[in-house]
Image 1: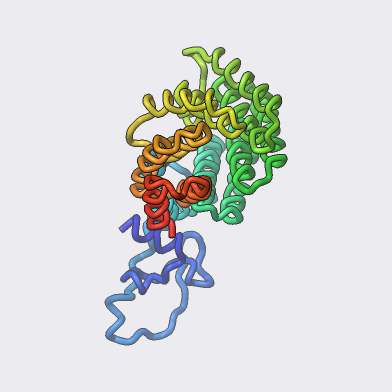
Image 2: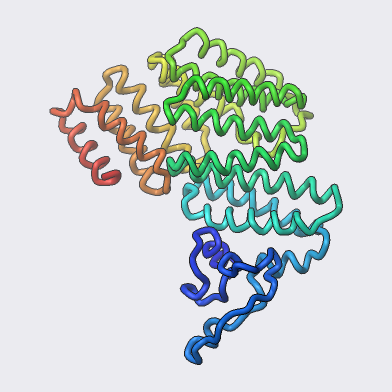
Length: 367
C-alpha cells in the first residue's frame, strides 16, 4: 500500500481511481498533515470506497514523528536510498521514480516538523539525495527539463546545510547531462565548478578523480584531445592517492578502479583512439558486476563502437548484439538512443548480413 500511495502521489493519480481516500494534493485546504476538509455528500454506492482512511502513509508517519525525526526513520530512509541505487542499476529508474518522488515529499513534511538541528541536517542531506535521484531517473529517460528541475532542488537542499561535496555530486550529474544535450562547454564549466566545491570541502581523492573524469567527457565531446588527456591524467593521479582511511561519501564509492578504467576507455573512444580504448573497456566489462545491467549495456555498446572504428564489423555486430540483449532487460531510453546511434554508424556496411540482421533487431526494439 505504501508503494501504491507513493505512485499515486508521484503521478498525480486521484485516490478514487486506486481505491484510496482523496490524496492530500486533491484537497485544496489540506496541510502536510492532512487537515480536515469540507466535502460534499457522497452517494451511498461510493461511501465505502471513498471513506476517509485517516490520511495516507506519509501523513501517518509524519504525525507519529511529532516535532522531531527519529534515528529509526533516518536509518530507514537511508536504507531505502541505497536500495534505490541498486534497483536503478539493475532495472533503470522508470519504475522507481514515483516512489522516490513520494518519499521526497514525505521527507520535506518531516523536515517542517523537526526542530532539532542535528536531525534537520540529516533530513536535508536525505532530501538532497532523493531529489538528485529523481533528477537522475528523468535524465536517464532523456527528460532533461524535469531532470534539471530536480537537480536544482537537490542543490538547494545541499546548500542549506553547506554540504559542498554533495553540491559537487549534483554539479557532476548536470555536467554529464550537458554532454548528452550537446552542450560540451557547459559540461566542462559544471565539472570544474564541481571540482572547486569539492576542493573547498577538502574532497577525497576518489571524489576528485570522478570529477576529473566528468571534465574529460566534456573535452572529448569537443574533440579537444590535449585537454581530455590532461583531465584523464588528473583523474588517475587523484585515484592513485586513495587510501584506506579516506572518508569517502557513500554515493561516490561506486567509482572504483573498474569504473576509472572503463571511463578512460570511453573518453579515448570518443576521441577516436579506438586501439587504446578497446582493451580498457573490455577489461572494465570483465570486472563489472553482472547485476549492473544498465552499466554493462552502456559499456558493451562502447566496446562495439571501438571495434567498429577499427573496421572489425562482424565482431562489432556480435558485441552490439550483447548490448542489445542487456538493453532489453533494463528500462533506459538513454541506452536505447545509443543503440540507435550505432545503427546509423552501420549504414556504410548495410550490405553485410550481420549488419542487416542487427539493424533489424535494433529497429524492432527501439522503433
